[in-house]
Picture (cartoon, rainbow, N blue to C red):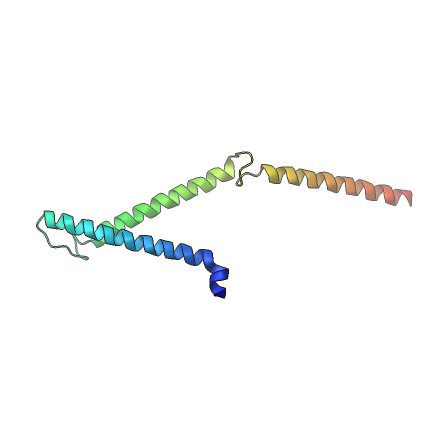
Length: 117
């Protein structure tokens, strides 16, 4: 149970990924078999007209779409600002400015103390 506590998010995401991939594979196979039957052909997994080719195409189209979407979101988040959003740096910038002001004040106080000695 310790592994699940420490890696629960990764485990659950891997399970969701695997489950969705299995469902995609089964649904695609059922569709492929129906298309082959319409054309009077027998379904095959491998070969020139096997299921593996449409399965790979669907898989990589999904992955390409997801990676493009994620990449776009990350790049736009790094460039653009939406005030008060979790991805925005506006609170961090304000906090950094306040910290700098505090540091300047502390330095001035130290200089005054050292000068009065």
